[in-house]
Amino acid sequence: MFDLTEHPHRRYNPLTREWVLVSPHRTKRPWQGQVEKLAPETRPQYDLKCYLCPGNDRAGGHKNPVYQNTFVFENDFAALIPGTPSGSVAPHPLIQAEAASGVCKVICFSPRHDLTVAEMELADLRTVVDTWVDQYVELNQTAGIAYVEIFENRGEMMGCSNPHPHCQIWASSIVPNEVAKEAAAQEEYFAANGRTLLTDYLEFELKSGERLVCVNDHFAALVPWWAVWPFEVMLISRRAATGLDELSSDERDGLADILKRVTTRYDNLFEISFPYSFGFHQRPAGPRNPAWHLHAHFYPPLLRSATVRKFLVGYEMLAMPQRDITAESAAARLRDLTEVHYRTRS
Ligand code: ZN
Image (tube, rainbow, N blue to C red; front, side):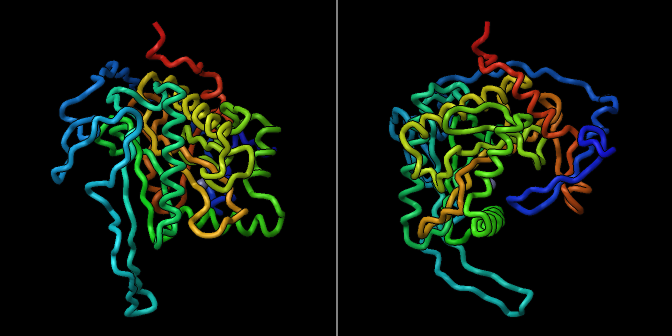
C-alpha cells in the first residue's frame, strides 16, 4: 500500500506546474554530522559602519536622513535602470534578447540596526506593510512597469551582507519567470472554475490542518504540499485579494501579525536569527486580474540545525528538486513551536 510517510513519491505544484521528489524514508538514516550551537548574536541598535542606519553615508555621496520608522530609497547598485531604451535582437530564432528597464529600491523596516521582523513591534510591522502597499501602488502605476517584486533576503547564508532589517523592490518592464508560471496556472484555473486556484487550495488545507503552521482571520501560514525547501512556508490571504493594495486595514494588521508569528517560529526552530528569502506574488501591473491571489513565499535553506543547510545541487540542478522530510512533518515541527521569541525568554 502506497504510503506518503514511507515511500518515495513526487508531488505536484499546481502554481508552477512542476514536480518535487519526496524521499521520506531517508530521514530514517542516521545523521552523522555534528549539531553546532552558534554563539548568540549581539548587534548594536546603531552601527556607524552600516549604510542603512539613520544619518549614515551611502555609496555615491548619499546620506540617509535620520528616519523614524521606514525609509525608502533607490538602490545605489540597481540591477534595473529606468529609461533603458526598449528594443530587442533576434539574429536567429534560438537567439533572443530583449531590453529590460525598471526601478530597484530598498526599504529599511526600522531605524534599529539590531531588530528583525520577528522582534519588531506589531505597530511597526504594520507601518512596513503600509509602506509596501504605497510602493506597490506607486510602481504599478509607473509607465513601463509590468511587475513589482517585493522581497527580503535575510541572513549571510542567503548572501545578505547587511543585518539591518530591510527588503528590496525590483519593479521591471518584464514579468519575471516565477510570476509568469504562476500567472499562467492561475489564469487557466480561474477560467475553468470561476474561483482562484489558491481559494480552493486553502480550503483544502484549512480542512485538513496537516500542513498549517498558524492562521488568523485574514491570513494562513502553511507548508505547501509541494514544498521544496525543508521549512518552506506560504502565506495566503484568506480572501482572494489580487494584490497588497486591495487589503483592508484589518487585513493589513493580519498580515503584520502573521509575519511576526511565522518569523518568530522560524527563529525559535534552531534558536538563531533564521535565514530565508521571502517575497510576495501578486497581480502584475495593468487592469485588475481576478485570477491572481495574493500570497507570499518563505524559502529558508536550513535543514536540521543552525549550520546544516539544504543545497539545490546535483540531481536537483540536473533533474528535479528533492526533499527528505515531508511537508507534514515540517509543518508539525513549526506548529509545535512557541510564539514567544527565544531572545525574550529569560
Ligand atoms: Zn507564488
